[in-house]
Length: 279
Picture 1 (cartoon, helix red, strand yellow):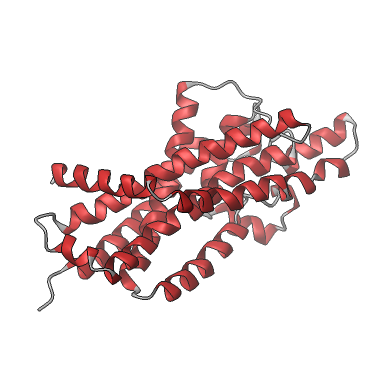
Picture 2 (cartoon, rainbow, N blue to C red):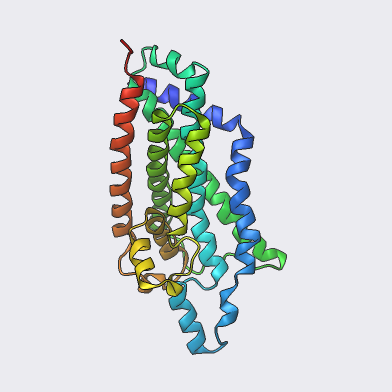
């Protein structure tokens, strides 16, 4: 099964690499958000340029030095959502063109077929996320607001960031695969996923400043998987940010893992049903 899984995963990754349009689409919206909303919504100007005002700003942004820096880390969560969206869409197109039927008839098991799509969907957002972070740093050298990384990186910190992206991507890839195996028409698929990803994103702490949220919004955002992932990223990017969070990165990673396991179980069940031989 390992050999089958490896071969199918390589095929999925090659297919993603040969589809630059999907990669460009995954990056286009985060880049526009960085250049437009990230630059325009500079809430730092609303705080007095005093030690007290700076301290209040840090509380509002949970330790991020500027809103753009806060926003840039949130864009990583956005990338995980948009990039994995195409994983489920590919299932539908493969079903329409008969690719899924031929793959299911091969010696590869349903577990290998599903696992390969999941692994490919997990790995792609990691590269895209670091491209977005790199761009956010770069724009700071062009006379605009840029991502200010104030913490010293360690191997553990980098590992926690990568792990957060991988788990978040696994969760959304599983969710979108479950939808892709359950729905046969592309139009219906995109209608459903858009009805999911936008509310999930907008009820997270990815874009909206934490300190400006009403209490009920904070309660909702605290359990949002995107919030859990970007909390890990922000605690590692910004020095002293851990003091503004009730938990350390390990707790948030554990919450993310619980979300991912739940979605994985659901997607596995639906994939087995879709790939089962028809009587």
